[in-house]
Image 1 (spheres, rainbow, N blue to C red):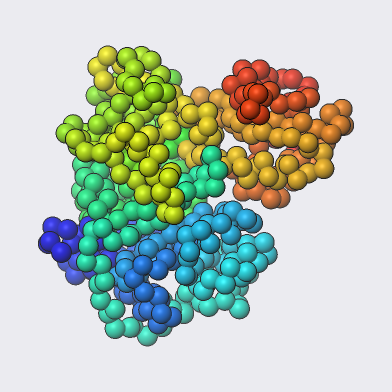
Image 2 (image 1 turned 30 degrees about the vertical axis):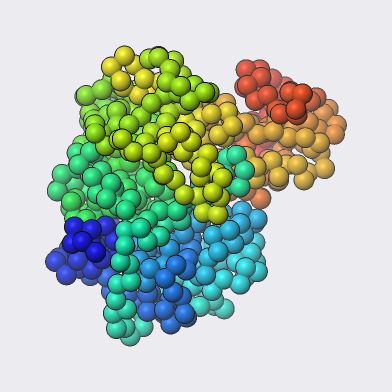
Length: 540
């Protein structure tokens, strides 16, 4: 392997950093009222090797897959180091996943091992699914779990693997940048989630992003976004591991009311906005902490145009807007350079972006079309695990078809409009898999037919939606909307519970039985007596 490529391999990077600056703080994991966890370069190397030794002991070999189902814990990064040392592939899994969705994530990727927290295993539904898959499972006892009296008895202990005697170095087993690194699930908005396969070559581009963001060596980036999300990986974790910022700070989970207090306590100078986060933060009552922080830059993907200026003025920050997808495509609008509302332009000479119509032909400035991208002068490449047909369709004509709709102005600045109708619903920066909601509601005796769609969010964040479940009821006059909301709340992650239930006599469909979502969006009226809001229904 060429020396300049050594640091593109995750575990080799960690080994180098531990050798050069072992005592330097890399990441701090903030945990609310509980003590923060400080991780130094040497901790990453040591604990990564401890877990790698254990995984090798149970006969995992290069090419096998390790699922990591954790919130923002140090052990998430340790697991990534361990997998990289052995040439295993890391499969991040949403820690909120339950039921058939969780089973699908574990089995479709063919995972050989799972790292999971006590909070997940304390849920009987999740524990049953994990047990039924037969995957070797390592349970993490967390500080917050212990505070709640949770235990991990009956499961192999991740803590014991990490805290046991110091093991011999297992070595480095990745010799090519094409070696599989990550298997990252999509949201599954048009069917079962797909899994994007990444090699270490992707790291060569990620290494450039701190420069695009304008990070300085004294910066302390912060995020409450989950490490399963590409945003947290690219904008917050990797800059700290490369040592191009002072260190980074993660919250176990994001709380809008605590954002500025966390930034003040930990000296953060940047933080990552996604979707409606900025709107939620701005909606908080004015407080002394609004300008008592050191934050100079908000690295944003979804700042509403109307909020941009007032947000900067109130909090004393500058907004850098950017766009990226896990499959590829990247653009950036540095502070004060492009027009407000634009997510920018792609890096010149590196990435090309265009807006095309349904025939994949470029459209004129100002006209909405699909955003497509490719490496400059090269065809786009995407690999969906086990799905060559979807891979080929995604990059037809040599361009990556993002599924995002947008436009560009006469000067070439790009703007986000919305997701394609078939592309699903985006809420708080994540695409909501409507199929899981449909399944839960369709199994209720009250419901004869159901279609889930999005309407523009009240926050007005670009591309953000609120979730509407349009149901055809067996007895429209006696629909128990409260019971339907409660059913969703009991069976779905909180973010997927519909914001509205709309009762219809029938769904508008084409001759081929395709629901005409456009008509539903146009006719949606939250004040209608046949539209029920979640917050009102569940408050009764």
